[in-house]
Amino acid sequence: NAGVTQTPKFRILKIGQSMTLQCTQDMNHNYMYWYRQDPGMGLKLIYYSVGAGITDKGEVPNGYNVSRSTTEDFPLRLELAAPSQTSVYFCASSYSKGLGNTIYFGEGSWLTVV
Amino acid sequence: ELKVEQNPLFLSMQEGKNYTIYCNYSTTSDRLYWYRQDPGKSLESLFVLLSNGAVKQEGRLMASLDTKARLSTLHITAAVHDLSATYFCAVFTQGAQKLVFGQGTRLTINP
View 1: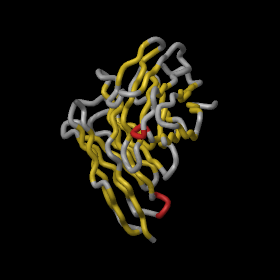
View 2 (view 1 turned 180 degrees about the vertical axis):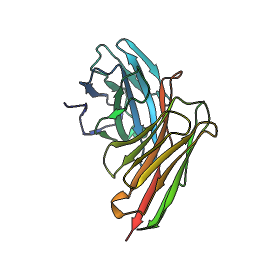
View 3 (view 1 turned 60 degrees about the vertical axis):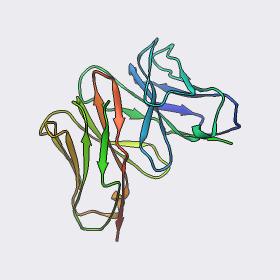
């Protein structure tokens, strides 16, 4: 059982480049999330999805886009990368039905924009 | 807008001592999570608290929830060096379908 898988783990981008962070979960979770964590800080929600075809903005969506064409995949796209997007990105997933469901996090993707 | 605040943000303590981390949140919540994060690593789920008065314990860590006060605590008993990490609380609201994190508490336990 792989859980939540993120790729790539490390990436260096030049200013203005674009890239996609991939996230896949194999637990049939309907909720998925993208967070960013700046050094020494907590996690801030970028985008989230409550099911295939449904996405919504979090606290810090500017400069990012997402799509959710399948239950398993929730890619995060960075358009026109800026130094302010240097951060660690975490994808997470959970079930929606029933309380007390654990939210599982991926291993993180370290992104540097230079 | 839901806000989650932890204190203290930094905590240095000696092995064998007890201490408490506090997590306050601003609006009604469905559930509260505690996570541990080691440097350069992902988040490890510690506890999920669902209802007022809920208390959960795992080893030297005990978490509690007071929904009326909108307060959760993470109590560390007889700390050991292996508990050194950053601890986050996070609050989930069903209505907003979001998990909002506190700033984290960086805990250092010295021999």
